[in-house]
Image (cartoon, rainbow, N blue to C red; front, top):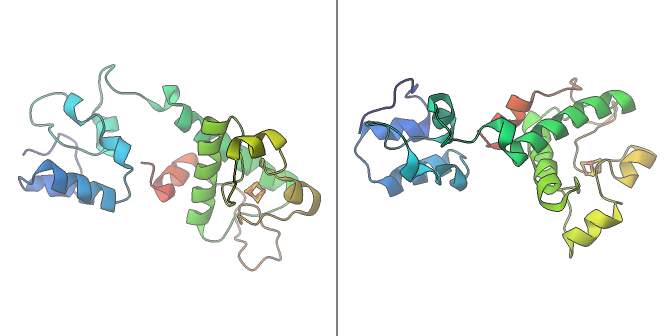
Length: 185
Ligand code: SF4
């Protein structure tokens, strides 16, 4: 199997293409590298000779036709951009800081974005709900939730007061960083 043009050959998923491994093995390697499984749903539609198997990251860079969706028309991507922008604004409004461990921020933002798409509201992703739809309608746990609005309490550690042991020095995070750290690219 030939590597697609432009492939860095360093990513674990694409690196496996150097060997003529069966698709299942390549897919497992990709999943192990935190690529979401649905990223490979397009596999039968890959264009061109020699581009038999690739990961979503490289598919994006190789995409040239309407077979591929882009960030502009993907609701989850749009929501992720929106929730990142919201997070960056809200830290400044409230004088709070992001977690020193950026992957915590990334996973929470991703969870909020997923709820925004599936429920129509950014329901807090750090809680268990018997009925998510009902909770989203009730609004108490829609981000920023009532405890955050009233007392600056964020149990997800998305917004941390300066004196919190887990608070970092940053008030903003880049959407691409969110994607990278949350395993969505
Ligand atoms: Fe948002 Fe509240 Fe969840 Fe923090 S605890 S992420 S403020 S909903």
